[in-house]
Image (cartoon, rainbow, N blue to C red; front, side, top):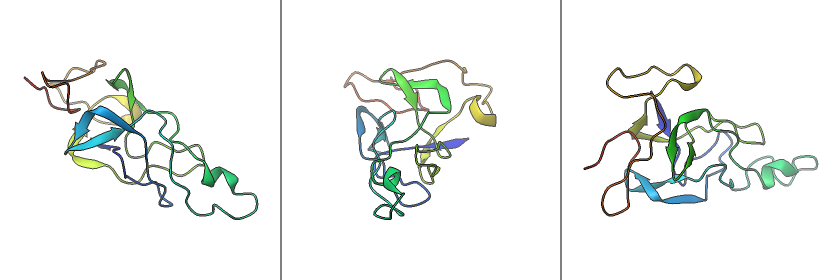
Amino acid sequence: MTAVVCIGDINAAGGAAVAPRPTVLSSFRPLAMFMSPVTPHPCCGVLGCEIHCAATIGTARAVDVLAEGTPIHIVGDVDICGHPRATGDFTVLYVGGGAGAPVAGSIPNVPLTLSNSSGYGEVGRILS
């Protein structure tokens, strides 16, 4: 099982995800938008390191779980600058078959967008 990436979660160099998915929360924090911009981080400002000043989260590995119609990001996804996502939410977990993650027998391995009557939802928990 792998933690989902939310707003404020950082990559290995400290670049934080900044763009939210406003209708999908994990521990009361919005999940990071698909390919969210990332805050500038080292080696930003050094000649030849411009990519670290304007990076985004790269391709999502958790393609079998959707939030607001696009795949969620999980710890280990690699930003376009080459730094992997280092922190995520360990309360609400992504359980799926991508990238060697174990599959929970009781959870179908299919694309899901979960929500409740208020329009807010959480990945990994079916809301009534």
